[in-house]
Image 1 (cartoon, rainbow, N blue to C red):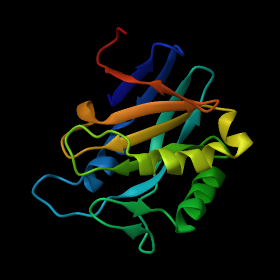
Image 2 (cartoon, rainbow, N blue to C red):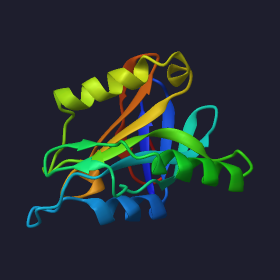
Image 3 (cartoon, rainbow, N blue to C red):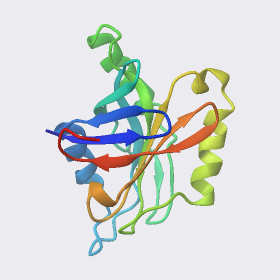
Length: 164
C-alpha cells in the first residue's frame, strides 16, 4: 500500500513503501516526548518519472542531535548506502534526505535550507530529482515533502487511491 506523492509541476510521482513509513514513524518526535531530532538519507529506486523509497538510514550514535537541531556527521550513513547499493546490484541508491521536527505540520527552517544549499553546490547532486522529507510529530499526511531538481524546490502532494 504505502503512500503516494505527486508533483503537478514536474508530473513526477514518489512512492513511499510501508517499510520506509514505519522506519520514519519510529523516529518521530511525538508531542509528549523530548526526543532529539533524527536524520538520515533516503534510499530507493530512480525511474524516468518516479522515485520509489525503499529504505532510510537511521541516526548514528555520533550524529549531533538536540530536540531542535541535528547535524548528520557520521560516515555510517554512507557505509550503509554503499552496502545496500552493492546488495541490490546498483538498483538502490541515494535519493534524498530526511529528518524530523518537533511540530505537527513541519516546514523547513533557515538552517534546513542552508544545509540543502551545501548539497546543491555539488553539480552532480542536481542531475536527478532528490526527495526532501521533514517528518512532524503527527503523521505522514502532515509531513513536508519536496523534490529538489536543478536547484529548485517542487511541492509534492499526498494522494490516496488510484487517481491523481
